[in-house]
Length: 247
Image (tube, rainbow, N blue to C red; front, top):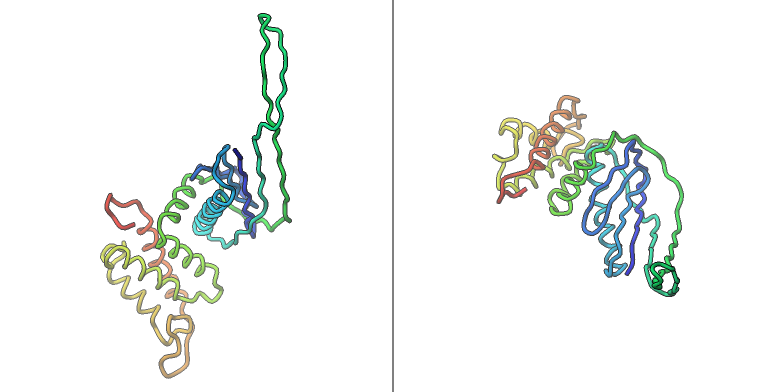
């Protein structure tokens, strides 16, 4: 039987003022800044399977944090600590109690780990473990949620603010919800946002330069509107739905 502890380093690191933790798939998950740590109780499950589980949990947790806190970070395997509980040696200790001997077995516990270097620190608000845990579970359960959050993180940290990721969010949400009427925004807003995203005269549109003439920069109002629509659709998609819903 082995107890596992896997550390996944977050680069740049998160900085939190309260330890955030929840339980998932046989692990207690903690993240407090530079790492997401997955700790198990003693189990007969193989190290290979447990490491794969911890990696999936860490990836979903990091994406949930990245989306909620508007940051972009990557995940690296940092170190693992394994604790083995194997009765390799026993001792018989005689304790005088009512003149009866008591036999006590002691197990040898072995621990080993290698830790890698430090990382940069970024700010993160106070504990929101419940929201992170819920969102990471949605990411784990839904490929569509994972893709949409990845697109939003990509857009948020693109200095060019290319519009294709926002359009992808709209299209995938519509596919998952069987039409645009369930997206949580009006048809008028949706039509205007898609028109901007597909405007061939805008340099950052989905298909720039396919018309004659010079390309123009998107206006701040146009950009804010597109982001508002995409944010609204994504938030609507992430809301709990009635049993039998698609999200």
